[in-house]
Length: 150
Image 1 (cartoon, one colour):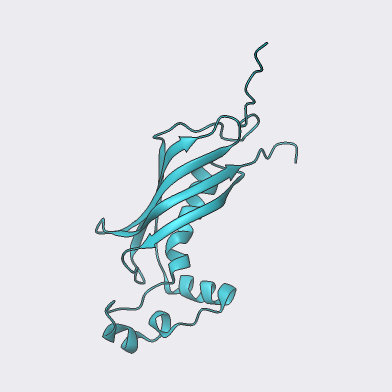
Image 2 (cartoon, rainbow, N blue to C red):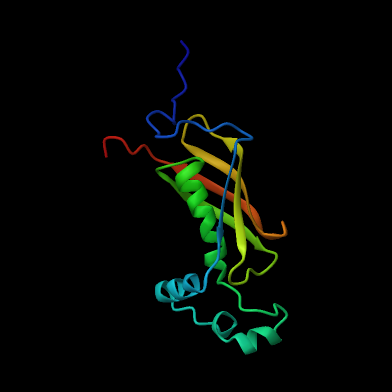
């Protein structure tokens, strides 16, 4: 007797993603992002607020907090791929280049593997700036819960 494998993606809003599937979102950073992130976290590092000091650092400018930079990945995952109901189980991120105020950033997600028995994905993730330089890159594991009937 053969036992059928459980479909861990049953009733997930956007369905089961495919390996190689990609998503990306772009936005411009703003000074208000820094203020909002500070309100949430208390991060008042002078490199985010003191322009004269920031210009003397290796960054040469005011920079947004790392959480502002990586926040676009949350939107990619929750809104696009795997989609609604998705949360991070794990992230492993490497920060390669700081992002300044009024810079375009693009978050990119690519599905590396998908489990059949559970709605879990392994993703390659990155954030690039307007010049195409990698600011953040790494991996993430996500879990997607069905939202219908909750």
